[in-house]
Amino acid sequence: MSNRADPDDGGGGGIACTKGASPNIVDVTFFQNRAGSGGGLFCVFGSSPVMTRANFIENTARTGGGVYVEDDCAPTFSDCSFDRNLGDLAGGGVLNGGVTRFDRCTFCGNRAAQGACLWLGYFSNTRTSNSILAFGQRDRPSPASEAISWKLG
Image 1 (spheres, rainbow, N blue to C red):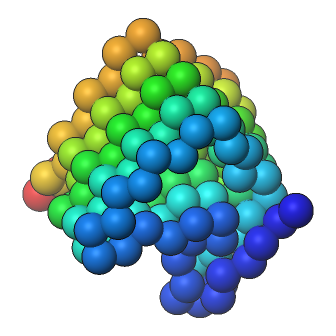
Image 2 (cartoon, one colour):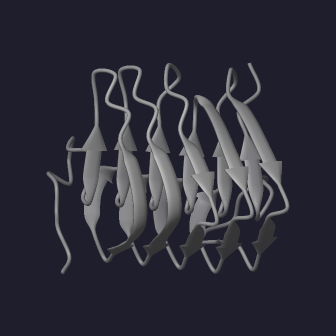
């Protein structure tokens, strides 16, 4: 089933974690959801979800096609996959502005103008271990890296 949040300013087509929400989410698939930010998952206002064996597949948003993380959030992703998500402007797989950890995750076939797999904000803190970032694509010419892009100052 695909869900849709307001494409202009809504966040979290699949789920929105706000105001300190920190759920443990296990064995779930976010498939073909749409939103303005965070097509699959939207993390704002201090939320810190723990995602285990979550699949983000073919989700779409202007920013953070699969996942959008704001600067005061600290989500953790273990054994997750980010596959064929689209961030129109930035962060096809994930747009990270927070403190985010990826363990044993796979990013494959995500697309964005900047940061097809990951877009990292200026103050973001991203830890990635034993993960694969592959086949990211830019949707339009950009000086940004195809797989990872970051904001400098």
